[in-house]
Amino acid sequence: MPKLLISTSSFDLQNNRILQDLQQQGFEIVLNPYGRKLKETEILELLSDDVVGVIAGVEPITRHVLDAAKSLKIISRCGIGTDSVDLVAAAEMNIPVHITPTAPVIAVSELAVSLILSSLRRISEADRNLRDGTWKPLMGKLLAAQVVGLLGYGKVGNRVGQLLKAFGTKVIAYDIVCGSLFADTVCVSSLDEFLKQASVVSIHIPYNKANHHLVDQDFINKMQAGSILINTSRGGIIDEEALYDALVSGHLAGAALDVFEEEPYSGKLRSLSQVILTPHMGSYAKEARVQMEEEAAQNLFDSLVNLGLAQ
Image (tube, helix red, strand yellow):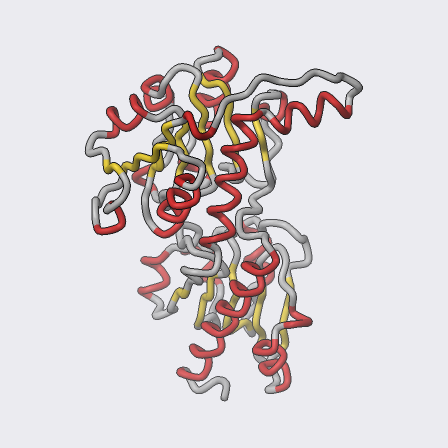
């Protein structure tokens, strides 16, 4: 019996009509038994010889994994990024890799804006203090008074910019391409100038080997003193050790991270009160998640039909 693996940390199989239809056609569906991001060894174990398709999360689907997955014919990512998949190896093996490019945009954008607001108004700090028995209003900053710099101005960055403008925020952007999306946003041509102007930097670029630890000590030192860093993109973009040092020294006033180089995260940023940490939940809004799962299942189904494996 052919198998389909759902390797995402969670998936609502009970309400996914497409996958239920595939089950009726004889496909066995295997779920992630760990409820978290899989390690390479774990996905190797789950991708048995009978698995022909996978709805993937952010686990490492490396060349080693693909070499071992002898029957795998389709990868359908439940999300936007493909940095967790060895695309070169997949292409060599004629394994198509699909994404869900539209579904997470609103959810990730709204989380980014909420993290900016929470950081500026110190909401998480105040909540923790009150729960610990300390009644102390904390002085924050107005979002309307900030210059928010969007590092990357694709679909998510653009949506964040539109939301911020409702607050009266000045928005600038730095992107490798200054296209039509920049019509109503200042496009800064120099990264150094971008960092000089922004009092809040929000990251919205995909991860690749070229930008690994792009946000390093040098990058952070060029940021305004007292500024805030937000990341809802990918963890590997930030050198977390350099970020920690900048927060301890006071060069950065705060940071909010939804993504980390190693997940689940257990590092020392947890010890800093001026840091907000969330467990990679950018797309975890019910409506967005439903759409993502439906799109991922549809991509998988269409590929199976094209290969003559389903109808």
